[in-house]
Amino acid sequence: MVNEGKDATSDRHAQAAVEHHHQQMLQRMTQLTDTLADAVERGDSSAAHDAKNTLVEWCENDLLPHALAEEKFLYEMARERPDASMLVTGMLVEHRTIVNSLEELRGLQGVRAAAMARALERLFALHLEKENKLLLPFIVEQPDLSLVAAVQGLHELTGELQAEGSGHRHTTTETKLD
Image 1 (cartoon, one colour):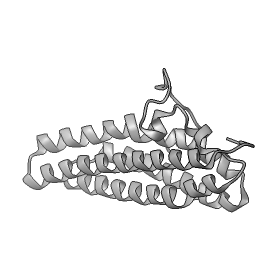
Image 2 (cartoon, one colour):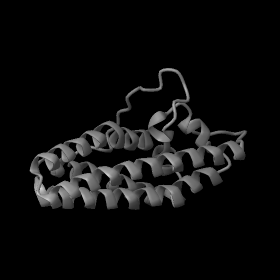
Image 3 (cartoon, rainbow, N blue to C red):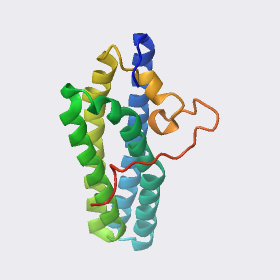
Image 4 (cartoon, rainbow, N blue to C red):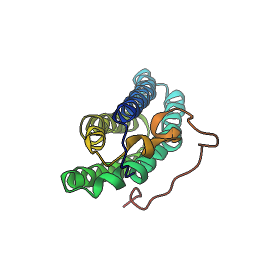
């Protein structure tokens, strides 16, 4: 979001909130992936099946809405800047890869499911590192872009309920199966 009278302190607070939410999301994904891997290692196919389904459900309900909100509210404003357009393009490719990997995970069982889950977790960790270290600082450094305005009221991006009725859905054409 373009903002002529930017409050740099508020933008840094918004950046910290998004980064904290990223940390929480990665911790949850790691926990779910570990649960799946542990069940597979024990040879408990029922627990592995349940753990995989829980991970897939979390991805559908938390990870994908987060990615869609990023595309609409963060990536769109940064993509218009020559200094960030290639970064954003690469991050959109990562979103598609995450979606495709999740779709593949749905059909896998046992060791293959655990391996795909771990690969998905590692891809997500790398993606978050780019957002936290490259994209968010870029947005915050731009005098005419406002991270606060972009994330205000968006639980999907900050993990906080900042406004009444913020549980709305976002749509995009970027993240979909190839």
